[in-house]
Amino acid sequence: MAKKVVATLRTASGKNFAKVIRMVRSGKTGAYTFKENIVPSDQVKDFLAKK
Image (cartoon, rainbow, N blue to C red; front, side):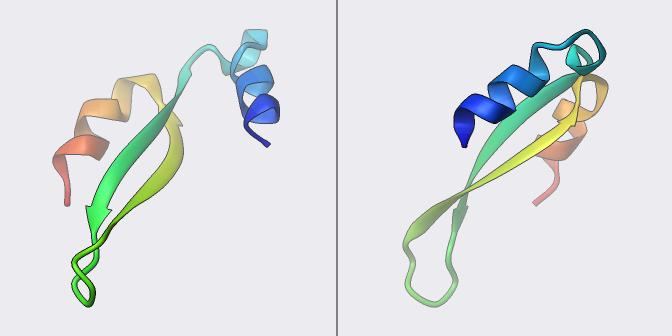
């Protein structure tokens, strides 16, 4: 599945996007999980700044 995402990001129209992985802590168990999103390159800082 990751290969498809990487191939999509490398196309001519996909150069303006970035794959962002955020570590999120669960309120119930306290364990960390990872959330992956694809966002436009100019919105990466805004995406990481919000909780």
